[in-house]
Length: 58
Image 1 (tube, one colour):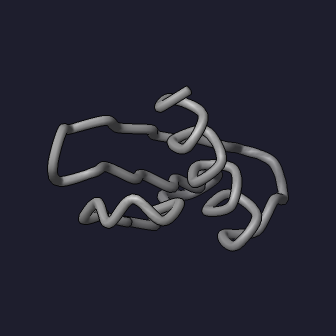
Image 2 (cartoon, one colour):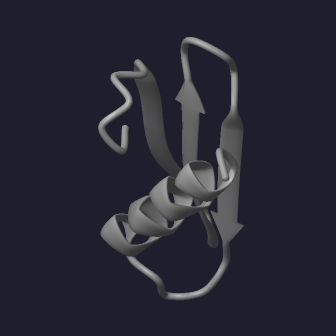
């Protein structure tokens, strides 16, 4: 992730009206979960989760 070489766990899912993207770094446990009930698609949610996770290291 971001050139750091951290292992990354990435999970997408949906349940009725909700879409979820979860990302977690395996080395240190930084975790982001994005839950959305709009029409945003999974690639957009995944990109948002990635950017939030990268920001957690700043």
